[in-house]
Each structure stands twice: as C-alpha cells, then as structure tokens.
Length: 119
Image 1 (spheres, rainbow, N blue to C red):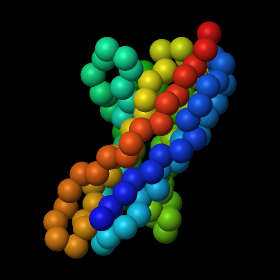
Image 2 (spheres, rainbow, N blue to C red):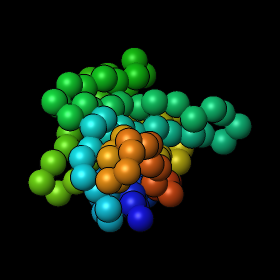
Image 3 (spheres, rainbow, N blue to C red):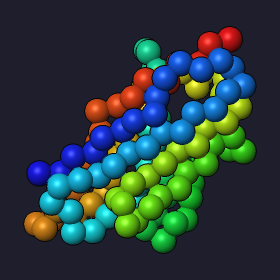
C-alpha cells in the first residue's frame, strides 16, 4: 500500500512562515507530479502548487511570490515553503502525488494538515 503523510502545519501570525512536508512511502515504483491543495471551510479544494518529475512548477495566482514548492526525489518528499502568510491562507492543506504502484499509475492523497493564520 501507498501512504502520503503531511507534516508542518500549525498556527502562525500573519506575515509569518511555515514549511509543509509530505512523504510518500510504501509500494512505489515511480512518482510523477506532486502537489499541494487546500480547502478552507465552505470552499472547494483548490490547487496551491504542483511540481512535475522534471521539477517544473505551477502556482495559484494567490500564492505566487510567497510560496515555493520543491521536492527531494531520493526521499519521495515534496515541500511547500509558505512565507508572508495571510489569514486567507487558512485551510487544510493536502498533498497529492501521481505515482506508479507496480500495477498502474494513480493519484494518492494525504490526510491533510491544518494551517491557521491569525490576523
């Protein structure tokens, strides 16, 4: 089985920083795009940023210039460095990875980590 585990969430004041990590483990034979999504109360889940196997990145307009996504392929890990946080960044942040489990390519999700930004 494949498991994605996020960490690094918490409570921070506006203007502060947090770094999220997501580690993929289990039956993994290859990983393509990894990404971070978020869902605020009463809102749809939205893409925050993603990064391809070749390290091409893509960001939501709302986080450009403040957030940076990166990955360590040797560790099956994706990171999200979040700077200049705003109260509107408050949400549950989810990690997603497209990976090959030996049988097929599939998308896997983590359980989510809460990020709360106080004003």
